[in-house]
Length: 135
Image 1 (cartoon, one colour):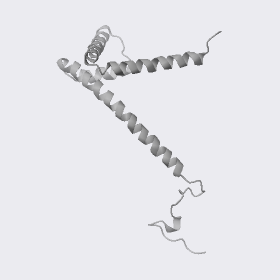
Image 2: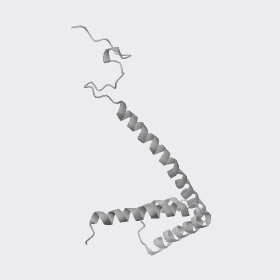
Image 3: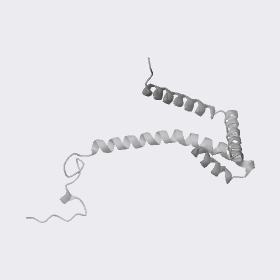
Image 4: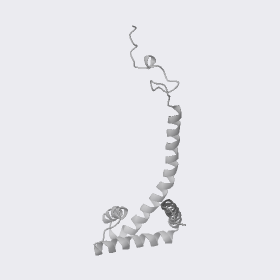
């Protein structure tokens, strides 16, 4: 039986998720994090020597590291990885708050033609508005 393209994409997506979770856990272990940092710096340096193009996210990292003295590059990269990891965990909670607020906003929005939310004052009674002239 032939595999469909959707099945291949699903497996690929699942593999990426597994790889991401493994790498996140590996970055919590200090000696693995230091090893990864050293390998990344070495990869960037060799790519520059040989004139190879770096992937877009590595180009940004390379520009960041170019402004740092060579002796401090590993330390700064490790700090950046730790900061990114802590930001991602905090970002998940932040995104959840945003989703909840958006859901509340949608739930409260009114369907009446004037576009007012239920419970808001009519236009003539809103503060700062001039009363309409009687006809």
